[in-house]
Image: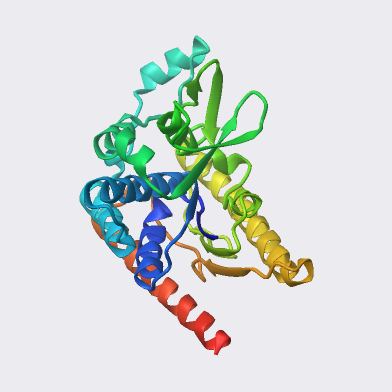
Length: 302
């Protein structure tokens, strides 16, 4: 079973989009797609497109699905306001005092993009197994769901809801947030479901970016920095565990193959001031790194 595992990374997920395109062009056809945070969004758009193809054409072109995802990013994500809007200081203060804090930013633009571009009928007709993960705020447990779950898109929104910056999402009588609170690359779930050939696309390099002019007194900047530090460590831990598990797979009698695609140096993106050129730059970098990684894997195999 082949699995495509898409890690978190907020708007650095543009890097992931470029890497996905390269992987799919190279002939990788996943049976399973797993996503956390921005990876959940990318996984959902891939599932939506493959479901549309399956419903309308009776077959799937993975390279075309990758191109549709790339087009979505280029056309729709060009500035911070396309994803969220900053809440007014007055409303933020009032909500905090009244114990109704619902994030520093309003993710309504992102939620609108999801509603406009993802259809339940396509998600339910995709022949690809997809799971996205979100964390139950009360219990601290991560929950993975499929499109057969009645609140699947709510879980997608929750998985992409950055703690503190964005509000928790109510699903039933429980509240959920970014799956990256527990796992940044959902590799364990893919292996538990029987994956033996896995491609992980992570948005974080092994080393943490060290900003020179960061203002720690800017609340949004501070929240983003704390998250970067935590997420980078989680990503490294997830990938190291996966590499160790796969290395020992031959001893268990079930040889596995793992390809890890991630930037070699930290990606730089100002979450509060990015533009379409920044998004395009990351997409191109993701494509380049994926091509190089796959070429190296092919050379080792030979």
